[in-house]
Length: 218
Image (cartoon, rainbow, N blue to C red; front, side, top):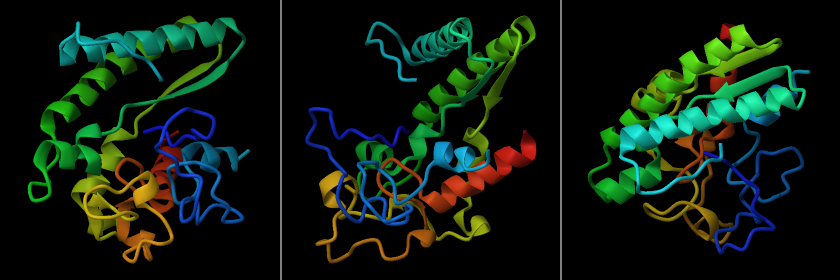
């Protein structure tokens, strides 16, 4: 999920206040839905958005998104980009907000249809990117984060975490934006125990583990 920021967007869901970005360098809340650094920050230290509507069922919509992503990569190449990395969809059916929306407070299982849609997107995207990599000069990488994050969610203790079905910062099952603030008496004191920082976004520690695996692979 995109962590932002959305400071200049007309939305009531803001996060430019503590404890957001509490683990970021300087500890200044800059308007991102995270406790700290995200993959782009972590990778940078080492030297899709797309829309359509209800005209599609889940499978055809996933295919449309994948095809649009490939088209976007081709456009980037035309503009001169020669090193392009494209992240896979994550297991969106396992993020805390989707568990809450589809299962409520007590039924916290992953939403299988949404995960299947993400897998359909990935299965359409990766072969197309591989073909582009062979066709065009430069390097085009498909970066798979689905499997690693899914394993972290299913087996949190394997990665040194305790909780993977709820976010760390917030109240009850709604843990995002203004529900995550320094006045909250049950604020997130130990983000290391959680896979997710809020209802959508992994913690910096989770991101770091994902990036470490990616670096070993690529």
